[in-house]
Amino acid sequence: MATINESDLVCLKCNCNLEYATTNLYYLTYKVSEKFLQCPQCKQVFIPEEIVLGKMVEVEETLEDK
Image 1 (cartoon, rainbow, N blue to C red):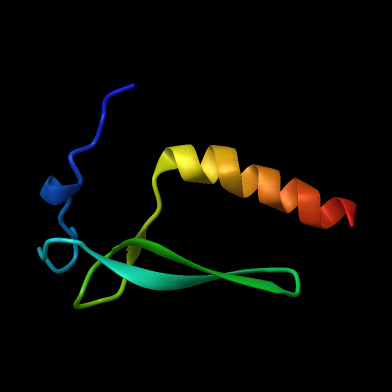
Image 2 (cartoon, rainbow, N blue to C red; image 1 turned 30 degrees about the horizontal axis):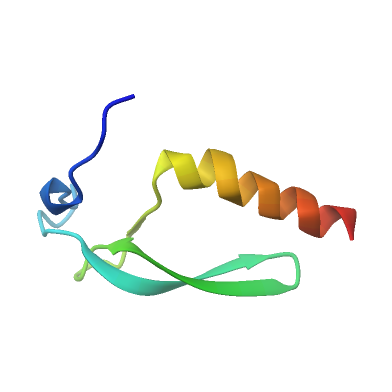
């Protein structure tokens, strides 16, 4: 898997460099705040594949088991 140079990530819609910003994630009745890269103009969030397929799946499974 290729590594992504985060400083090179650009919003395709706005052509702006992405910046770190606190993002609220919601699942069921839970809310978690985490810093992710985000477009400063349109607020579209970039969540890396490793997070989506790894940590987020783990958290979903844990919360659903409760």
